[in-house]
Image (cartoon, rainbow, N blue to C red):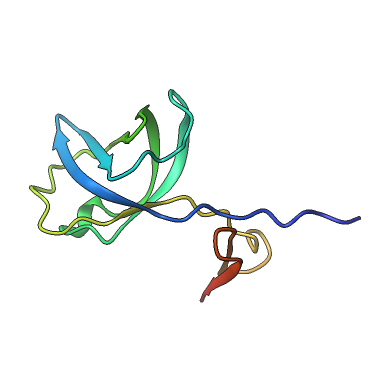
Length: 111
């Protein structure tokens, strides 16, 4: 059986991130191309304070906006980060992650 190689999208830079009443709203610098109204798992990376970061289930609420739940208020950001959709090609086989970025045809492998 031959299976296709599926690529992950490039990370999308943040323009803003806010917390209000247990909901984090992230605005991206460009449209993220996720389907409006869908719920997907994304990585939030590089934000300070670090409490914003992690693998989160987001609601796609706009062309350049997603929202996710976060109980405690992490405070205002001091550094913005990225949203990253990662399709782990090694999931279920190894504890490492292997991602293929289709935009530049490269693999990213993390221990």
